[in-house]
Length: 94
Image (cartoon, rainbow, N blue to C red; front, side, top):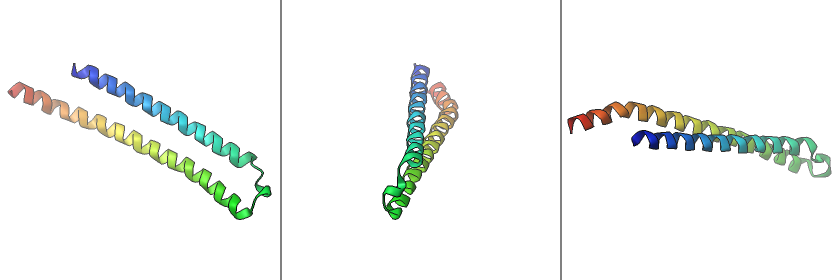
């Protein structure tokens, strides 16, 4: 029974990672489209610079969050792999 829960959890994590990547790529595409096609000369230069920085910051923040999520998933897999022998040893003794 334990393996089916692990497998279901693993597929759920993959689905979450896939959805996060999809949202991140859509955000990058939207930010690029806005930066490339917005009439920046029609607004104040300071506001235009701040808006560009905001869109770039948003994409970078998304990339950092994605990297942290991947790191946590890999770390959790290592912890589970390391704790399996300990669990089997406790069950054997008990």
